[in-house]
Length: 153
Image (cartoon, rainbow, N blue to C red; front, side, top):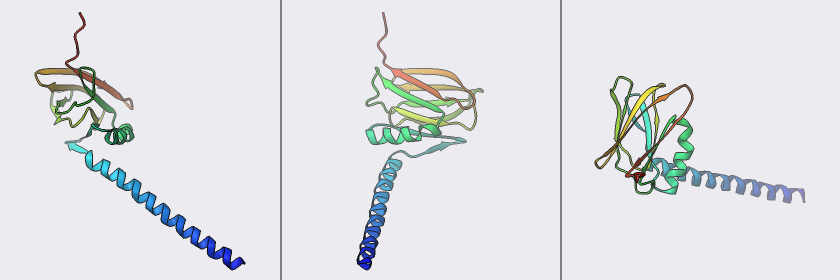
């Protein structure tokens, strides 16, 4: 009788291990697919990610957000849908361009090498939005660029 229980326990343990490996592989595959869609980019000492065109990318970006103290959101007439190909330049306090890229979705998260004053210039069509902000210590900058925003009368 005891031998029978030991054999049953062995089979259950083996099945649990197999199930754990299968689940781990599944979730690693999901994360891998998301990571393939959104790649970490580097220009000089600055790293950034951009995307968010679907729910999977937005979930991945949400998980990565704490690693990026500068978080930019791009909207077109108040909507984040279909916002891409915005040209973005990030300048340091001296006016030198540190990052120049085209966004691949409504979000861009940036990790500069240190705190400081940054100027963000975003172009969509003929419209340019410029902001100068200070990143201080361990704080985060959340900036929204809203293109073609209806003007209040």
